[in-house]
Image (cartoon, rainbow, N blue to C red; front, side):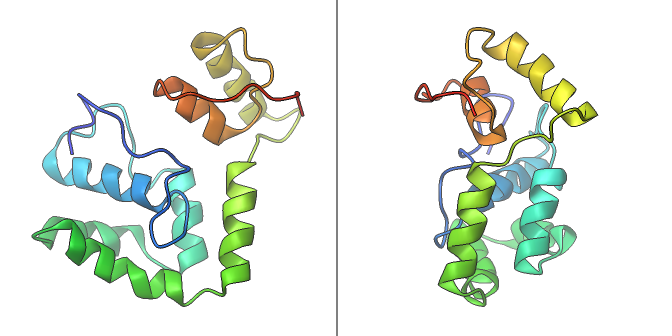
Length: 146
């Protein structure tokens, strides 16, 4: 995975039924290969996923580095995902895809600054997943502003 030439998976792309996981693994593979570019592995979004799965980012990175193929990585993470109830995964996915910066915080200021650089005409974009997809040239449907 060379993130200096391509994008990681979308936050929305599911792996074992959970969002963010494939993206996190893509970033780990790029870090292991020395081609992570401007991306960060074990960033706050990844940390939230790791916390939900009771998984350590360094442990996953070690597996990524030693795996001979994607199946080995998938088999490693599967028990962490499957330890969760379907309702927990559904709630995580729903909440994660609608994760937005808290109003009036520095995070909101950062979000708005990025949005003005990426898509200044998209005031309807209020969720991180949408902003990341726009930044990575993915289509994001127009929504009524939240």
